[in-house]
Image (cartoon, rainbow, N blue to C red; front, side, top):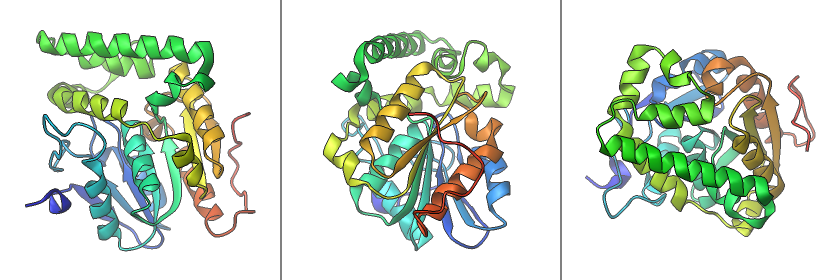
Length: 284
């Protein structure tokens, strides 16, 4: 079996224009169920587990840890959809969605990036001193996290989950969720390597001029807001949306607001002048 036809765990329901949902790390297709319930009456919704999670086969190995192994994954999902997709990704899943959209290999009707982590943007000049401070913090936490896992700390995942979502988030999760995070730390560490590897240039980002939304929570780590702003500036068709009171688990805690943004952004694929919806874009 080649990576082009490796198993992918999906949940496929509803009918109408196709929305393709890619979750973040430590998660599976099931994480999208609150959002899917809101979208299914009007759309065909396909939620997929990323490689290494749930029933989706891992496509990376010791010599293939970058973003490249995800291209056949995206192409395979596009083949399942069989039509243009409204592509939605959360956290690391947003990096996979962005990679797919920029590849030019699939037909994307609209692109919604939720709590995106394009870490390379924090290392560019446009981010300024704040970006330099954030990237140093993120690198430090990543190194501490990898070290904790290597030492056998069963709750090493707390370090990164609390960094993105705030202190106490890991301990507040339901025990089955914490347990799944514990069991998939090795996969998540590969996600980190893939995320560091993914660094699309300014021309690549500018080439995607289709309708897009960059969504972040007002209570997330401040680097998320900064990265959202840098993405908005780099992508001509994208608009930034801030969801009040939300943090990194925005798709689960604020599914209603996210559904509205996805539908609003999708409508732009038909009519670029139709703003619609009630959610306001974040100030530039």
